[in-house]
Image (cartoon, rainbow, N blue to C red; front, side, top):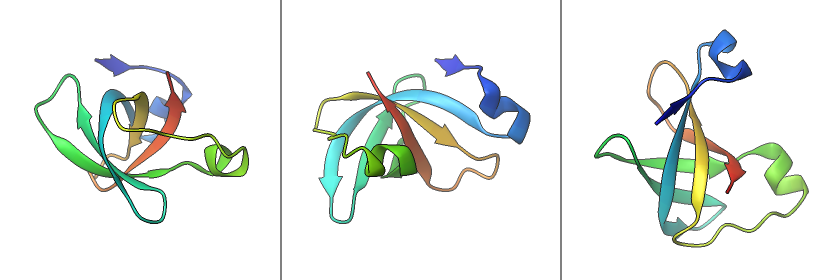
Length: 77
């Protein structure tokens, strides 16, 4: 499911996904809910600063740039 927020002005898209694997250095593998695709993501800056923990199976909101590179986790639900 595509979510439209302020990120759309900057050419970034927000997707919802589920964390499937936790990797070193706050990197995660996330399966996107609306697409059958797994991407590599990293933890966003505010989530690192506030030490928000992400576990396998958590629903998260991922911000992906227009080029389809790595995603950034911006919210845990």
